[in-house]
Image (cartoon, rainbow, N blue to C red; front, side, top):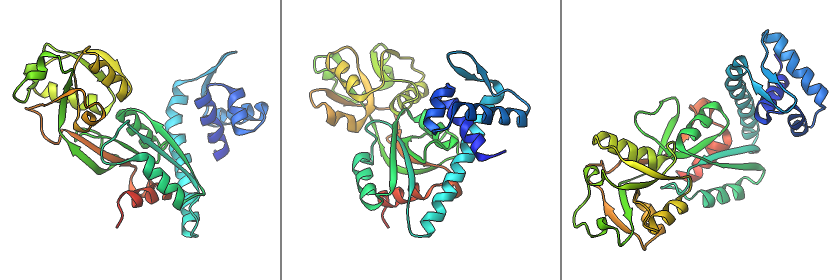
Length: 292
């Protein structure tokens, strides 16, 4: 099995199209097709279902994809490690992050990294914490800034960034705005909630807190960015339980403490693969984040 066969297979799997994959790899379509067929012959299984419009992975193809991505990531890390020993940091830094993550200013960190390592290409992807963890595990991301719970898989390393309590945000004219004491999940059982998609860190933290209290809640308005959430609460369309630092983004909203929730319920971390699989670029970024 040749590395180029795996590279060609992964490109087709990601593009779901032979022509686009060939253009991306800058190879001929016939050569790409021949490479994939050679891999299928070696594995004795079809990897794609081909149609005139797109290709989709077979069960065998899905099984191979994760392993192929990990192998290619390890090869890339090996090349970059050798370059680093020679005193030159090259290659790619692929970072994932949730929006408005506590404990790190990603834009400033990446700017500092670029000044120190101008030969490294920086790629950034924003998503929810569950998706980011999967991407790091698969080798598609070098590291990610995300939310993590003690129940999550221990296959990744977690470097703490920040911990903070959760806070209820509501419109100043909402009945809860005049509450004189911290609110428990029981006090919020009948409220309409604005929240993120289920794989986002704040949503996972809030779901866990309410589940621990045995309270079901109604998430009627689901968004995938912080400012949309704040806009909806600002229009008095619902309330939101969010990490405390979110209150600084919309000071017109009323912020109330939530009791019955551990103070450290929202814990953000840097997620990295095992030490032996961590890329030199990821190590260099973490050195800037945690100077000696």
